[in-house]
Amino acid sequence: MRMNKLFRSIVLVLFLLFMLVPLIATFLFSISTRWDRTILPEGFTLEWWKKVISRGAFGLTLKNSFYISFATSIALTILVTPTAYWVHIRAPKSKVIFEIMSAFSFGIPGVILALALIRFYSGIPVPLINTTNILLLACMELCFPFMYRPVANALDSIDIHTLTEASQSLGGNWISTFIHVILPNIFPGIASGFLLVFSTVFAEFTLTNLLVGARFKTFPIYLVEFTRFDGRQASALAIISFVVAWVVSLLLLLISGKRTITSDNLTIGH
Amino acid sequence: MKSTIQVSKLSNRKKKGVNWIALFPLLIFSIGFQVIPIISLISSSFSTKQGISLENYQHAFTPHIMEAFQNSIQLSLVTAVLGVSLGFIVGYAIISTDNKLVKDALIALADVTTNFGGAPLAFAFIVTLGSTGVITLVLKSIGVFLYPNFRIYSISGLAIAYLYFQIPLMIMLILPALQGLKKEWWEAAINMGANSQQFWMRIGIPILGPSLMSSFFILFANSFGAYATAWTLTGPDVNIITVQIASLIRGEVQLEIGLADALAVVSLFIILFCVGGYLFLSSKAKRFRA
Image (cartoon, rainbow over all chains, first blue to last red; front, side, top):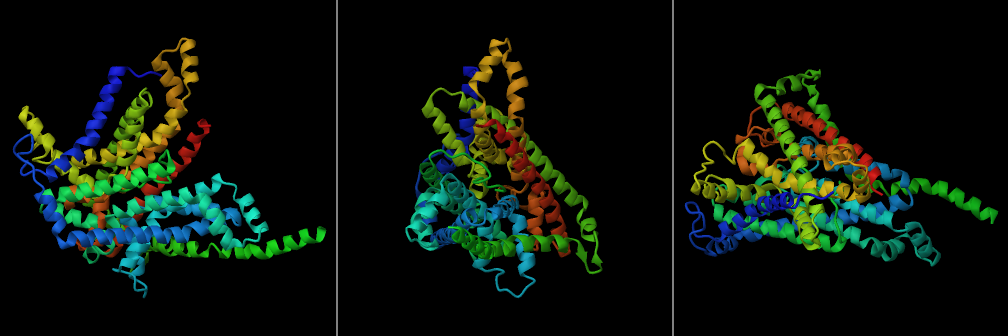
């Protein structure tokens, strides 16, 4: 099964160039004085970074993005983790319902989810449309499988029945068993789910754009606005987005050791 | 002893209801924000003032919308086929690399870049291949003029940007399957006189078949549902279906409201078909991994 060495090197070098050139170019563009006539930048400067960071909207959008990402991750952790445990220990027949839910959440693209939510919730007297809450709920819906799958996998990989029985025979009730026995054992799964949800929501553009528009500006919305009128500052923002995605991915690698992409953790519809 | 068993059986039966009640918060959430909105979307796509009809669908499929569907399907086919084949070749090159450090670094790169999509990615491609992009300038200096024949802000430009997340995604999907190809099978085939082409045609590809097909489905769906990258890169200029639906939502186009529903339902059907194909085939593909 050997691949010709020369062919392999060519393949890998081309792959690396394709993956890295856009990133390096964006970074250099953000620190160059002028770069639209010559092959190499004409000079380097930190002016664009200083400019973009000093804007009030920079801090605000970054704060908004961190807020919505943390809120979604925390809310999903609270909603999903105890339920997943209960599903595994007391209602295993309901597993299939949650599998189907995962598949749907994972399949429905942001554009269609946004349309469905707007059409339904604008027709009933529930004050959700155009609020940050509808965005939070939509993000939770979109990210449900990223939280559920790693937690369910973690529960499958430990002997929850023996652990639960042991805890209960020592006098623990459901809540104390869950908090003191189950949670520590599935912590890596929860942490993976949390980080996946966080990075997905941090990069979320479609739902934010269509559900709340300009009322709640997140970092990706701010970035897209900038691409229309100032390329240098937009490139600085793009680099920040890449760094956040990169840091979260590294944390995930650290937690899960080796990560294989399955329907658990892949985001579709960028 | 006997009595305790009976008691616990009885209480088990009583608790059955309790078992399901504990699932209610999550089920209610899902029904409220997934099931009901999607069902109401489907039902409203079939309803008009006169009652249930296919009118929305008939009105929705104007030549412009037909073109949007055609563009979306073409874009998804091209990026899925290229993504599957290029990702497979690169994945194989990664697997057969001897240096463990290089191998791990490449896998980590593919892993991270799978999540690089949307606005920042689109912008990175404007910087790279835009009219004054880095690669455009380099090519110009050696006498190759990309513009005006090629534009990154076009559908072919979009295909290049999509490949940036399609290829790493394919690598991550195919790596476990490639790792499942056992050296012994290769050695056995070679010992019996097969050449490398025969190995791939008779053993390698048939075993990887379900994985390759399931990856194709997910890559297709991935590209079909994509919106943020397209919107950042090309704005409303490129006519693909997600951009059309989004502009209907924002009310940029004056049209009857049922039309957006009809377009969304058709798109949803295409995507769910792909996701179903992916789930079905990927469960088949797992047979070969022990």
